[in-house]
Length: 259
Image (cartoon, rainbow, N blue to C red; front, side, top):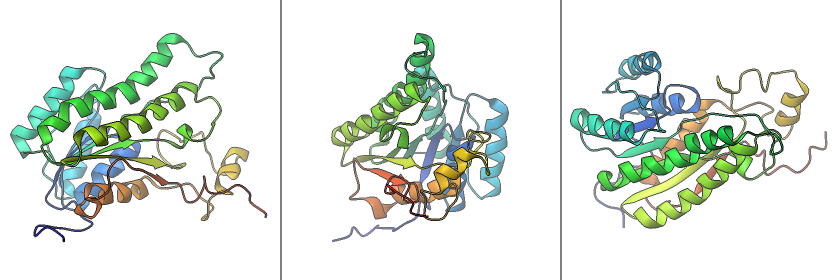
């Protein structure tokens, strides 16, 4: 039986924090949440980006607060949580979407670079869950996974390893904090964003190799990941916990393209 306050696929009325929410997929998620009626705080290290994104969120009708955050520094995560709670009230949704990609192979990756990539992705997500989950009481945490944890993508040694850890972190956190706080992840396919610009340029061999394994012959849009995030954060996903949802237009399902 559905609870009396069941509200299906919408985040209307919820308060969300999006770490890494001022660029790429994180920014798209923040804007999708705002357009759907949520109040949203989008953070990153860059103050100018935080202010610019906050203006977008307000234009979409969201209440927000401007606060910077370096996810490698635990005290700044505490500050984001406390400021958000003071201004907007209880936090319903946390999205872990900071991102940094180092294009190196196992044979040549430097130790400090390896550690930094793991810090930005895996360690930071763990820190954020530790900070936010106990304070939320009820709600949803969404981590950002990657196809690179499932398939070997050249030159992504540290990134792939960190994202493999995100898969495990998502599952174990779901068991520790569920059912009150659900923890899931989204595994995006190849998405057009400022981070991938120049890497998967239309017309190049690399681009063609990717899109021929999708059903729509294109890269994804960041907003298409935002749609998946709205579902996971909504009441419609109340029985979804510990899951990693792949949004890749059939890329990983495709073994061949007979054309």
